[in-house]
Length: 292
Length: 165
Ligand SMILES: Cc1cc2nc3c(=O)[nH]c(=O)nc-3n(C[C@H](O)[C@H](O)[C@H](O)COP(=O)(O)OP(=O)(O)OC[C@H]3O[C@@H](n4cnc5c(N)ncnc54)[C@H](O)[C@@H]3O)c2cc1C
Ligand code: FES
Ligand code: FES
Image (cartoon, rainbow over all chains, first blue to last red; front, side):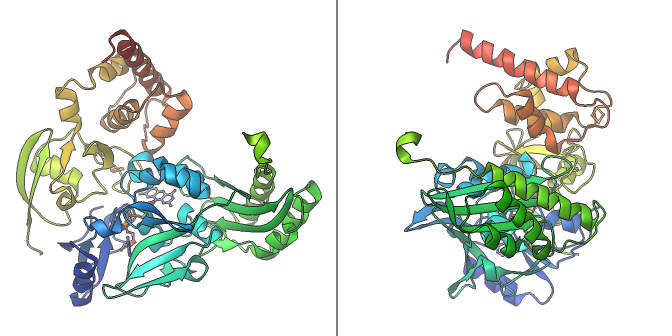
């Protein structure tokens, strides 16, 4: 199908864009990569009156280190995340997730800001943001505020961003030397949205897990932290019996529902399988001397 | 109806100026306004890959890009790639190996292949399949497509080794 009639405005700055949003009487939408928005418009699932193109706002670009964080501008395309040396070395969990996001041509256009703002429960980057508790930078044209990822994803496609606020950047903490992470998902076809996926990040003292954050996605209306499984694994050396306990705890963490792809029971089973597999893959830290 | 918008861009290295409705997709602009029908339209949701074109050197979906968003950019369609000879070897490999039947998917597949082949090194079959994950082919079963892209990658690597730039 084709998109419905819509007006178009190309914004040159954030304040320009917000002003256009505020003065629109109907449904205005920011247009970044368009890889979710235009697909939804072609299906007539969305019929906005005005598209405000934010893709030419330079202030929304760039990947840079700021103290202990990496600031990723909202317009950073998935393909840039995939090829960025800064992200590969400092936000390895995001780098590990990027190849799973859609197909190459979609990664050439889709943006991290769009992915986080759209908050599709089957999307990889929101899960990574939650696992690392990234800070979401929101700009309303006058001032900037930050919301932690754990307070950002509220419900299905619903976030803590106010109407008209532009998601200007995402700030990820720089990975520490004792941190290990892993990412995987199950999908019918490479590049399709996941049936179930998991992002894990753990801090170790020697072989012992000090802290671990486990986030599942495509199992509910938002990415979900598996708090009980995390508790079961904290202080352990991730031996088989620890992992079994975590798998049992998972039943209390997740409550997936049926959909056209798979039943809730299948999804729960797959989540458990994925947890075991990924914990087994979580590379145990090696002393620096050995690594070199 | 909203007023048409003026856009200026280059298409296959030729400057183009046009008036477009803001809701018009780049794929429909190319096909209907410019009669460049090598870019195909299938699903219009980014799933099939029939509509792939290059924008400023990167492969993108013509169905998930508005013509107004292409303002100021350089677009290459399959007609441009074909006429410039840039993918003559790839096309020959497809021909030799029978890598197309109805041909509906072929322009998009060639776009994906060309972008992949511009990266360094010879891609593995696994990498070729991965790159093709967004291209549906209902006829060939992909085997011959992967073969042709692999063959072209190997031939280009040999060609480069023989005449260092
Ligand atoms: C076939 C197909 C497969 C896909 N598979 C996956 C997948 O496996 N995993 C995945 O994560 N994604 C997938 N996607 C979606 C893709 O990653 C999108 O690029 C992404 O979800 C949205 O980014 P965008 O820049 O294209 O946003 P747009 O489509 O431009 O916008 C999406 C929404 O976010 C809003 N928005 C965008 N940017 C901002 C901003 N800076 N501030 C405030 N609001 C903003 C828009 O108003 C709109 O409502 C797929 C898409 C397609 C078509
Ligand atoms: S028509 Fe664009 S991907 Fe199918
Ligand atoms: S040759 Fe018919 S769809 Fe690929």
